[in-house]
Image (tube, rainbow, N blue to C red; front, top):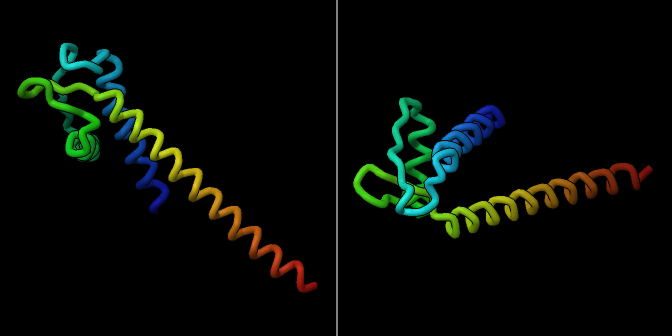
Length: 102
């Protein structure tokens, strides 16, 4: 269940950013409106707006702040690498202690 929820959030996040990247809305001059009837996409949009990754240039017109997006993207990838390394270490430890006793 958690995996499908994470996948749904990732899809919503990609669709939000795709909206802006397809319109080249990466500067205040190229800001575009954002509207969706999908609740999860709206939540992702609001989350990134609150974090400053998406910014409002004029009322109702938004763009992706690329330095903030790059920082968020790098941080996300670093956390993923840490989680994967921890999982490998745990699995390795379990295998070492269970197979090493034989």
